[in-house]
Every structure is written in structure tokens, then in C-alpha cells.
Image (cartoon, rainbow, N blue to C red):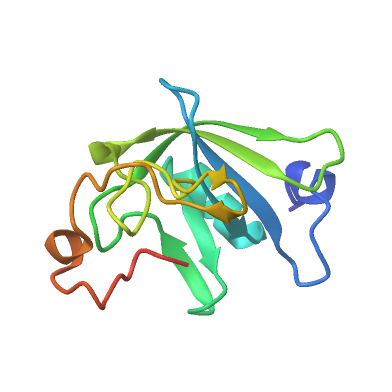
Length: 138
């Protein structure tokens, strides 16, 4: 059985990974950046939900497996260089970040420093049970 064409179209890094950007389908907002290997992408396509490769855990990570804030996959796009993926998703619960915010990109540069500006929609302690344990982060 031949591998699907996407396996050779993606320029996987030396570590077998490619960056994957999750974007909210309704708002267009960039929600997060994570990593995928071929198994993560294949599982994402098969399950219809975002599955990433967790570098810290060394295993597949189903977004929302602890928090319930899954990302339903609507479309996957490959960039012009073939070395980055864009996942168009429906973010269940409106929270993508392990900090309880809509997006992981919540700190714009203001002057000479990054300042957290986006509100916490739900405290991490309410999502994960303990503020110190945030299993949904990479």
C-alpha cells in the first residue's frame, strides 16, 4: 500500500515534525501553534479533530483531552514552501490556551515588552483542577 501523497508533499523537519497553526474558522483568529508528525496528521484526518505531537510528553496529544476544549477540524492547508500546516478549526468552548484564554497569542508587544491583554475566560484551576497542572499545554 502506497502512503498518501500528503506524506511526501509535507517537508518534515529533521526531527520529523512540522509546525501546525490552528486558526478559528469563524473569527479568523490564530489560536495556537503546535507541532505535528506524520502520525499526528494522519490521526487528525482520521478523527476529524486536532491531534498534535507533544514534544514535552513525547507522544500524540489530542487537543482538549484533559480540558474538553477540542478543536474540530474543518480544513488543513499546506503553505507554499510545504513546511507549515494551517488547521482551520472550530474551537469547542472558545478556549484554546491552557491559561484559559481564547488564544495562546494574548500578549502584544507594548513598548519594549510583551503585555498580557486578552482576558482569562476560565481560570486554569477550573479547567484542570489545579493551577499548577495544565495538561493541555505542549
